[in-house]
Image (cartoon, rainbow, N blue to C red; front, top):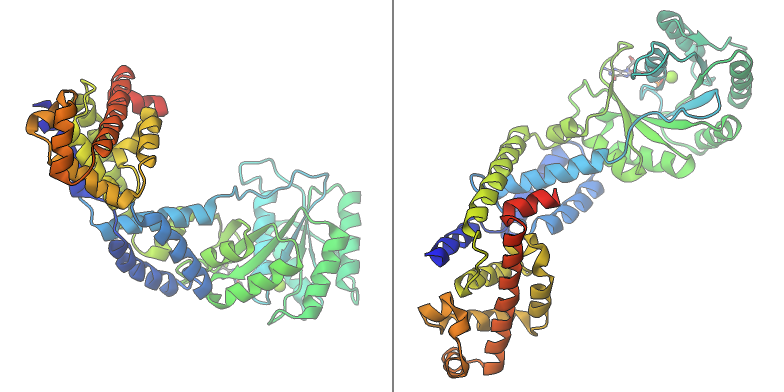
Amino acid sequence: SLSDRLGGVFERLRGRGALTEADVRSAMREVRVALLEADVALPVARDFVDKVTEQAVGANVLRSVTPGQQVVKIVNDALVEMLGSDASELELGVTPPAVIMMVGLQGSGKTTTTAKIAKRLSGGQMGRERKKVLMASLDVNRPNAQEQLATLGTQIEVATLPIVAGQQPVDIARRALSAAKLQGFDVLMLDTAGRLHVDAALMAEMQAVAAVATPAEILLVVDSLTGQDAVNVAQNFSAQVALTGVVLTRMDGDARGGAALSMRAVTGKPIKFAGTGEKLDALEAFHPSRVAGRILGMGDVVSLVERAAESIQQEDAERMASRLAKGQFDMNDLRGQLAQMARMGGLGALAGMIPGMKKAQAAMAAVPGSDKTLVHMDAMIGSMTVKERAKPEVINAKRKIRIAKGSGTTVQEVNKLLKMHQEMSTAMKKIKKMGGIKGMMAMLG
Ligand code: GDP
Ligand code: MG
């Protein structure tokens, strides 16, 4: 019979089930370890796990994967979203010269990255027209720092600002800016001095340079191998200068990408590039999904779950479409939905899919004391005869009294149950009108 077949559908949904808190907690222990092993900063890892735990409890588990695998997929998606929700293009659409200021600790890779970005822009890469780029080193601390940049400039055939001995960073920035304006450069790259540690003098210098140069981009360059330390660096720079993005260097090392997540969480700024080697073309666009896979070290699981999700969506759509073709919904179906509600603490998966379900939801919400109510409703349906369940319209006043007595409830409660069933049934008919679940899904896009 139709109701048996419908029952089968709900049985399947139940068999698949939803993630329980226990599933999620045990999987999250693994995730937490993976994050810390990938060098994600401790507070960032903690916040992330808390946030994702909340999302994961109650999520449906797909057939052919384990709950643990399902959690990994949820974690992966959350990572990707967090790592890459912003566009990571350089924003150079200002009146030229567009100033790009590089900041970061000593040895993080600022000078190298300055040359790498200059090479890209001047070579017409990044899918754009060639830019006329001028580079200037403001590093007056380290001996030969300015010469280092000049040498790189020669290598990549990008102009560097002539060195004037004894000039201070702010003055060099001023000179660079006017040279860039006078000589019609599109982009001016300012390579600043680093320190071994963040200190007040360094920050004051960064602020003074930024005030003079009004950069279109201030990029924080961070060594991805610094791991836990990277957070302090990011916090300090982020609080003192208006960063627009982050560049992670040494991604070619054995860094597992944890710094990326920490950087993103602490600065709130997009990661614009990844440095992948010492050579001047070893600069890549940042790929959130690759890094997420690296952090979790579970790329296979993610694609497994993705495939499972795809095939199930299609199967479900087709099976549901044929099973609900007649737009019927009896008490057995309602019972299945109630069981699901009890587990998920909300309307069942099916109810969530149905646009016309608002009234039914309202009817359910109108019933007070929902935990107990669900048990009562189940008891009421349990007290119905097979015929009453399949054809609830036969339930008259006399039958209502019998059902109420049998389930330890009241006639009023039986009426509420019948009303709820009526609303859901109406919603099912709407689905039929829309061309079944398949048509409905197509409409929803
Ligand atoms: P700065 O002090 O911040 O200007 O750092 P430098 O640009 O001078 O770089 C310090 C060292 O790190 C140099 O030996 C660079 O070749 C190296 N380096 C920079 N970026 C990368 C990278 O992405 N990968 C690797 N392997 N080495 C890098
Ligand atoms: Mg340098």
